[in-house]
Length: 155
Image (cartoon, rainbow, N blue to C red; front, side, top):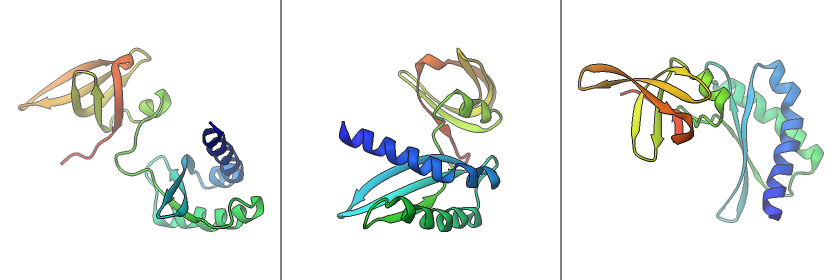
């Protein structure tokens, strides 16, 4: 339980440090993750932007945060990793799902997996347009049955 509170506290501190800076740059904090690899502490900061993030924006955040972390005395020894959540980022809440309307997504429920274009979202369901053997169909998926939903790359 202590670790859970600790990471929550770190997320709050990082969010507070970045809030105004990210707002000025039209960026958003997607997540803060602490990992330990080969005995090294790695602080991963995931940054996103409405139409995707670029390397220059990530560099700006990295430089800004490097200075600010020293002010709060985060850790004596750590690696800072600032990156994007990736092309296939998880859609973690209703708001993120709504923002993905028109995008290509992957949805997994207990009994099916679908990949297609997200066409509509309500609190109760999503509608996905899928191509099944050359036929375009709209499939309704109840939101309560969704186990995983993320952006997808169309090949």
